[in-house]
Length: 79
Image 1: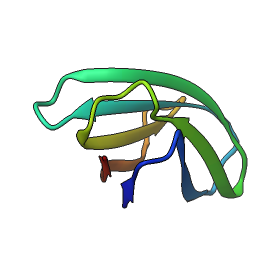
Image 2: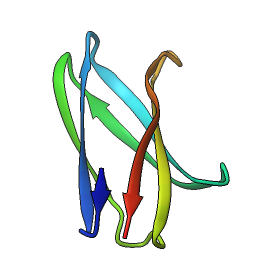
Image 3: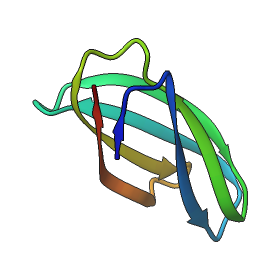
Image 4: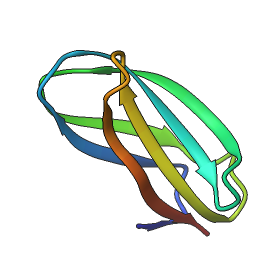
């Protein structure tokens, strides 16, 4: 998705509950933000602040506390 807002909502499904680590990488692969989130079993919606990011392409990774990937390389564009 393309965004020019202050935040985006990441929606995903999980079979387990617990803590997850959400990481944001720029197009060059540099880690630009990290956030720990509470994950519940079922559908989750996590708001991600993007107002501090420069315009460009970014990728989101989310891993649960066991290191299992919930999604990797989810792309968004900040304008």
